[in-house]
Image (cartoon, rainbow, N blue to C red):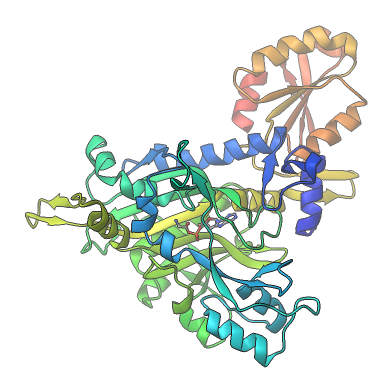
Length: 487
Ligand code: GAP
């Protein structure tokens, strides 16, 4: 990792990966557009995740719910009353800032869970101002975006602040349609919206983002995770609540040890380890990940325990993915508010049971993309250009077809037409071959195929590997198999 987040934003804009939204009108804070290469990366990350968590498993199914739902959902879930951050506004009303972030910057330490009274006292005690401006009283600010549903004014709707609630509201239908038996999970990928007081760090904290979420339901008595053996020997860097309270540093422990010391229970251990392993499988460095337990006053209103997978961003270790225990909080709330029976019949005890969400792995897609970009970014001084070492499954293009000169376009196009059936290909006949290689390195294309005059004779092409820059002569008839094996 060689650049900071601002430099990454500049790089992403320059290479067509991510732009500030509506830039011609001065942009809009907290909103971004994914460009030609960014939209491909995003699609690839979603596909890799969906394959891992939905298509490869018998116990998890996916849904695609609506962004605006009956507002009663958000009343029942507690978001209308409790989904807020504390805001500080300057006396002239010109500047607003999130109170916990402001205190963190001014006083150091962690102010998650701080109350408005405590903030007001701290402001007074330390005589804190923003560029010399005093603050009004600290108040809480609901982060849900509102809209009007239909033509009648006053019919308030909310843009969903998490994808999770749609899963809870549809729980019974999904369970019946997919004939699911506990334990099982329901996954969803989609947009979420939060009116963040101070969006920051590029796509790390934005107002419109995407989540990759799973609600994993168990019988409340099923404490054993049948998949735990898959991860028992896996080691992670761990920072429990107790360690934080004692001021200790994170230490590496295997899942076996974590279970033995009762730092984690089986389900949580499984989901935390398995999620980190997914990032490692896609080329990330294990040293940049750790798991951190929430302190009691940090927990969200629905959560009884929560561990975050944190990533070492250039601006510090920060939350990449939350894995919360939501117990029966949500289903019970929806049973109460809707009057509908969302319990399941337990064959063993011949009684009804409200399943518990023992783990809710909730990953921010944009944060995951930021991780992959930081991991991949390499300012290669020897080559004289940036190389984005993205895993081939995530890279926006897989193969570039480069005729050495324009005269070879026809022959090259034939190869392009053939390969594009199987790979995401790009045809580029403009500029020197060195410049074209560099352009492909910068957006992470794993392979470049060059067609030269000899190709007309020997029916072979030169394949260049992005990572090593090694070149190999491959028969055109064997090219597809060669690339398939490599990719
Ligand atoms: N359903 C649980 C839930 O929404 P969360 O910790 O509030 O939990 C889950 O959010 C994940 O969504 C976070 O770990 C983060 O990756 C992502 N996320 C949350 N707020 C975000 C924001 N403002 N911008 C980008 N990603 C965000």
